[in-house]
Length: 347
Ligand SMILES: NC(=O)c1ccc[n+]([C@@H]2O[C@H](COP(=O)([O-])OP(=O)(O)OC[C@H]3O[C@@H](n4cnc5c(N)ncnc54)[C@H](OP(=O)(O)O)[C@@H]3O)[C@@H](O)[C@H]2O)c1
Image (cartoon, rainbow, N blue to C red; front, side, top):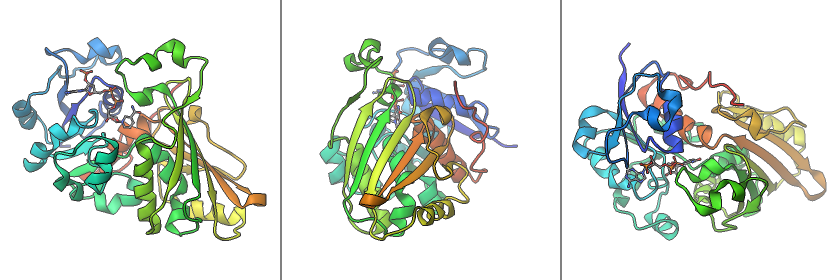
């Protein structure tokens, strides 16, 4: 069986580590290039000892020429603004790129620039596909640039897609209260992320100003074909990985809970990575940790005609690297579940 030569850039971060965890056992992948900001070639086992026993190439400082020679497909697990230093050239060379940063997620450069930095290659925004397979599977096939979705947006869009697709929502009534573990902020040290600040603590941050809010709004607006606003309050929770989003939304019609539930089941009936829980059951981060599953539970609050949706993912798997591999499998024409369907729930 032939293998695809793959490079992971930003391998020393959390998303890079998770890409390695998944890709080392992918039967159609040969990892031929690993890079980050490091000064000299370093065995991956030095930073992630769990990979020490494997025969992996060393990771090195990014060398543009070497990079192009060594691989055909690149996973970019780099911070925003760093990815776009490399994407335009790789794209021009015909390489396949799965970018985990926010650099190519938006349709309009203006929105990206309002929330991030100036864009250097906005012409590529129309070439990208937003890599949420449950919504864009057909569009992903044949693309060369996949903008892998943000972690919070993945949990929220999948939690709401069946309702938005059928235009059942009272406009602008979505309220998202979401909690993420500390790995969501990456591996670089920060004062507010040191252990004593996180342990035994729980707090909201970036209230109604988080960068993932416009990303959710873009995609939910596409789904219902109407501009939509979202109120989004993220929280930092005292665990390593996982997102739990509790979403409140008003419905236009007086639908019975069982009817709404059927809509969810029908929307996701062929989706291997979205699990709609039986009525009365709700997900927890612990039960999706390390898996590529998004688990969703719903509850109708009849007195106020508010639907409450609870959606759980692992921010590093379905929220980042697992989804990136799912996109890779689609792009390459492999079974979408390759290397993803047997990921164990992590303790
Ligand atoms: N963490 C999550 O839950 C999550 C979820 C969805 C999407 N994402 C996105 O995925 C990307 C990676 O996130 P992460 O959490 O893995 O971040 P991270 O832990 O901070 O890792 C960032 C990686 O990028 C490398 N890097 C940083 N600046 C660089 C530069 N100028 N040149 C070359 N390499 C550079 C770092 O190398 P050094 O170690 O050598 O500095 C490291 O390997 C980000 O865009 C993030 O927004 C993350």
